[in-house]
Image (cartoon, rainbow, N blue to C red; front, top):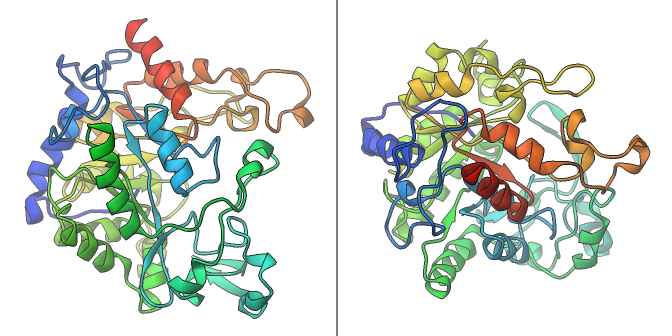
Length: 395
């Protein structure tokens, strides 16, 4: 999730109306009222060319694919998310290679998501860098050519929580975003419905300072494949508002600003001396500004319902109501089935040390978040999300 600017450039007003249509759904559900969200249709994706308004509400977004079951950002994870019924696949946390290609990795540091440490030919590429102010040691995509990255294979990022995913270590290579766009076309033809994707621009300020600006590269690819319009099945997101503002000038796609914890500052704000925090961005004034260049926000779930010191949910904030009043759609992140990631009241079992890969009451957590009126949710477990939506809509 990221930032924005004038909605009149690149058809911004039309984009917001298009994305906002998903909130209303086919039945005209009222914005912002708890429990009023309704599926916009019985199918997933609304067929060909239906626009965002053809997506069910709440929308189920496969977070990095079906990353609860396969190593994230692989075609195995992306395809499984579609098989499980995800309405949109977050196909691409986008980072560049040394030779300027956009590839799909959670972070530019790939020691935790590939087998690079097992490649002696790349041992001398290990570096310590300052990534958005944080000292980070490992191997970075910007130090590899695409050809070199293609010799690596993906591995599970959190094996302590998902040991079963390690079964698939080494099976898939790192996809480029151009391959994702071709895959999207192929899956749309094969499945007979429009496949949607939700790429994220990662650390755009960091890469711009390296001479590897990612927004222009993404815009060129979207234009090349005819997916740079307001009704294109690609929603672009970033944690940096100025990155989304830049995209607003470059393409007509629906755009979303990602929002982290209330006390955090987007890194582009840090770099430019903008003193505002996320807490400032989620005020009615901040949301109206975001709505001038973006059509949605992707807040962390804790901005929807905060947790107390024991990890239990407290009272919902006014963010859903305030964002809807500003004309913004909310797609918060991230629901996961495993105990450690759930609010405390939805965890099962009495031994915290045994929580690692055990599932809690994910359905109860989904139901609680859906009841706030959110328009969709990112989840590592799309199958659970789809069933939870059915329960909620029919309940």
